[in-house]
Length: 244
Image 1 (cartoon, rainbow, N blue to C red):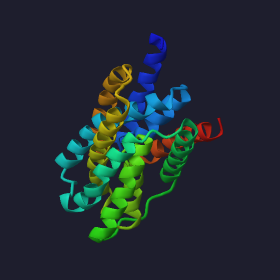
Image 2: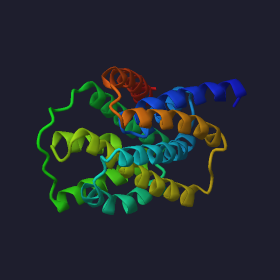
Image 3: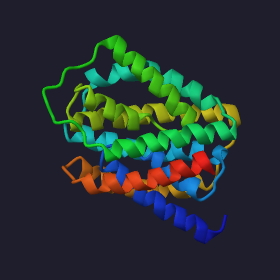
Image 4: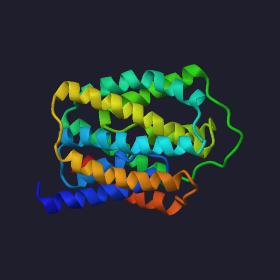
């Protein structure tokens, strides 16, 4: 990979990290979209996306916790089963065509989630423990298989089910993404014993973009236009993976 090529990818990663972290996400679907558009291999995409996710989710979780939005009571039922299943999903390396189809569907779902206006805020009611544990386990497995953290699904689920307010949902999702990405990466490394060297360069860009975005996002940064722009990029990348 040429230096110019790597710098362009790093710039895109920086922008994605900034945009996603400002709305409480780590950006895995965005990183996957960028790397897919640049023609990288699934074996390179998955561990790289997970590493970038870990870094940005760490920053986001800290900023939203510091701002007073995190709820341990809401978080732990979703996480308890998701962590081992994310590790299992990380160990499983899907065939290239299956990986592209599954990730393409994740990207299109993510795009639709950014296009749809979230429901109005109302008095939240926490989910039952079995429901939260089951949902978390499913999302953990999906996150490990695809190299995402699961937050792109958890946030809209929490909001549409009225389980928490927007900022709390973002805070819980940030830590959910972090623990699942860690488990998924450990599972992937235990199975492949390899790691893309260029990911370390992209990590610097992700930290810069994620640090600024999470700081602004946790303090009432406007996100409506950003969500629409992200949706366009995700749609293009998702269609490219499915039909290429």
